[in-house]
Length: 346
Image (tube, rainbow, N blue to C red):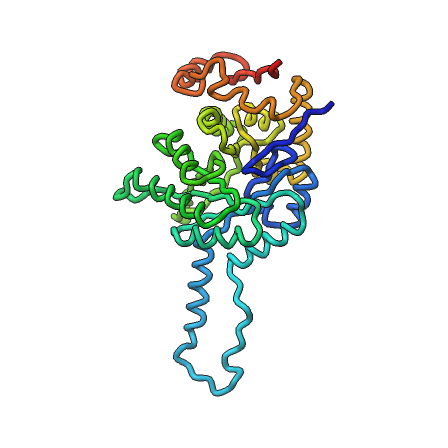
């Protein structure tokens, strides 16, 4: 009998641990249908950015004030204004369309800039039918007057405010750059998060030397980037046994999904691999995962989950400082640096 791929994430029952994470593709209904047909067990929409909403409102205000000092002599001088639709309205409409098009859970993603914005927009997304909300805590702490304690307190306040405002499951997508990642993760869960998504990729700007301008540069993730979330999921799994954990960055194959689950992840999220190979790649990944589980004697992903976490590892130090020395000395050693996945428990 083939291995059972079913898993549970944010209290949602999923057919497999393979989730299509936020990307330009997950805001298009036809592409989402293709992702689900290929086997994606859930879909995370692209982030709704509060700045986009505010920018549209500012542009509208300027447009409406442009004729404020004029007086019409005819009823048609000022044309009738149709119903105004902003970025939030379009996002909610897209959410409703996706919910009507596919049967898998749809997770709305939110990146706000103000405490009130987080709460207001999260509440609207929950009311619009999102099965869960992912708070995309993407911020660069560049103000030298704000301490790390202040930055963390603000982020925790956001999570707590949103938790009080909505009843749907809440995931928080974190960056890996906290001084004490394990402590911060536990604090976020204590503030009300049902799950953690590890990690946010910080897209670094580049400099165009000819134009002497700062330009955006988007580079798709590589498989080696999975190592960072693997380490922290393995460490956090025994510390947060009741919290959903999602691995993201570097997921491109069924073996990558197996590694994430072995470390303790409930789901593995894919973006770059789908952008490279198209929605049908999800089917390839699920097939590879199923074959790997069958070939290695696992009856389910549940049997594999956490078998290589910090608590279960024969050498927990591999996830800590000792790994640094071993990696440096492994340069001349042939083969893979990582240990093979263990056999299933008897």
